[in-house]
Length: 219
Image 1 (tube, rainbow, N blue to C red):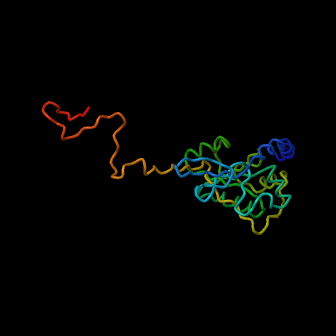
Image 2: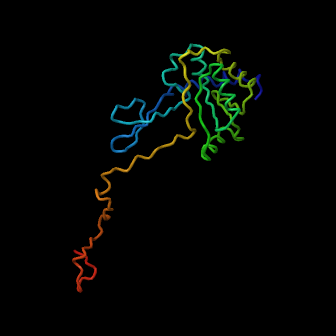
Image 3: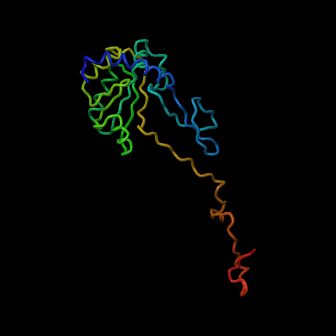
């Protein structure tokens, strides 16, 4: 996409992006005492273990809320959030990450490692290039500092970092969240570890075996 078209494209997508971001929030994956998994936007209590799952386009690192960011940064991050896709042993990813941190651009990082994640990435970026980033509805494939700088300038991000010194980026998350299956309930297994007979099965008692009843089945 040519740079001269950036301004009009970003303006044209502002309303749609802002509408979609209105519901961006942190969702908690809560595992109840019975092993049932539920999702809620409310933090769990002490007796309901949980795994935090971040959804929406804006990721808020622990201790840094979007509302606490400088106004110029907050406005840009709300209208044109940046999601950064990386993989292991990717030198260009490291360079791009340092650039974003140095410039003071809040971002959500998604790691691409499994085959399923590679296929999911190709739905966004057909050539599968890493690093890859989405800035609002714009796609940045591969890292070129001049190109990324032009897009970030057009989106309204400050040219120099204005983030508070306490700001820390959110930990990278897998592109496809891993769901851990709840452990089987101990009540489902007999205390001696033996398997319970299926409902309706007839029980066989060895001492019931006789010449007239060789199977030992009791009716």
